[in-house]
Length: 143
Image (cartoon, rainbow, N blue to C red; front, side, top):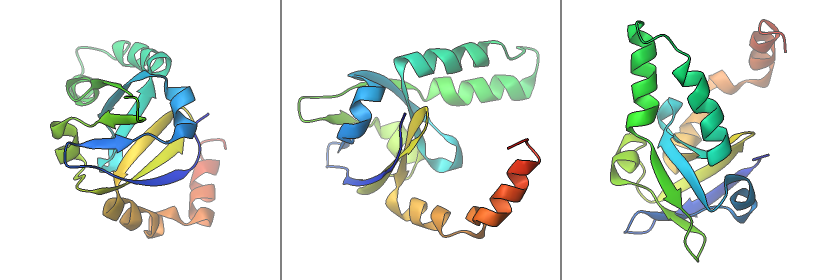
C-alpha cells in the first residue's frame, strides 16, 4: 500500500527520485499519467490493468466517457526506474501538472501522485480539506 508524503526535486532533465518505500509497490516499470486536480498519477502495472479494465467498460457511445478515457490514456507513459531510483517525467506531463523543480510525491493507497510543490501546498491549505467537512460528505457515500 502506498502511504506518506515525500518532497523531492526534479533535475534539469526532468528526472525525479521515486521514494524508496514506493518502489516495491510500483515496481521497476510502471505507468504515469495525467491525474485529477492537476497532479500526475503513478500506477503499478497491475493497478493500471485493473483501472484499464474499468475504463474499457465505459460506453463508447457516451461522449463524457470517451473524453474521460482519452484523458488518462493519451497522457500515459511507461516509466522505468533507473539505477539511482529515478524516473524521467515526460515533458507533456510536467507541463500538465505545472511541475518546475520542487515536487511532493504522495501515496494514495493504490496509486502515487506527483504534485508541483506549490500546487500541493495550496491544495492542502484549502478549506475543502477540513476533516470534519470531509467526514460529513463521506458519510453520504457510506463511509
